[in-house]
Image 1 (cartoon, rainbow, N blue to C red):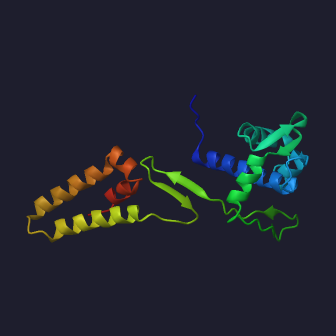
Image 2: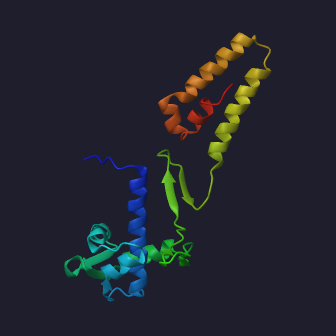
Image 3: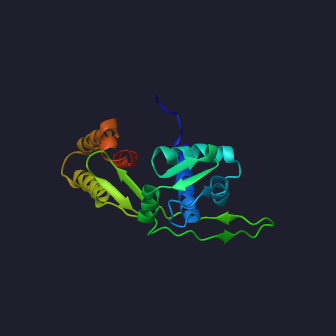
Length: 190
């Protein structure tokens, strides 16, 4: 079954799951026997309607991170849930920030770790990290373009070579492998 969720919807769902898991962890006091109110945890992350929180908690339950009980109104953290939060929480800080409006709102600073892969055994984990593979690819293409421009070939030949290079970079397979960098370079003016 395929889902037509937008990137923004997926990111919101991920943030809700992580936020709720951290709120549940905080309320558990690292104790798997500590009963936790789902409604209280949900309110900590800005979800006021328990019916909105239950599917999120059900997902955490299905992943073995939280034991949902009491008809969906509460539960207990699992050892796996506690371990997961403690593993990722090393770089996470939640700083309450009170807004200057009439009603106080708590905002949480998300310092979550992203793990991503291109599907080609290249894995990126961390916060604000970059990989030199992308920069090297861009540098190599720029060097090729410069070499074409600096060559002794006729201008028509240079233009044709750069056009062929641009078409190569626009190819869907090339852009998927190069992580979209190739497409960005292809759209640059000659």
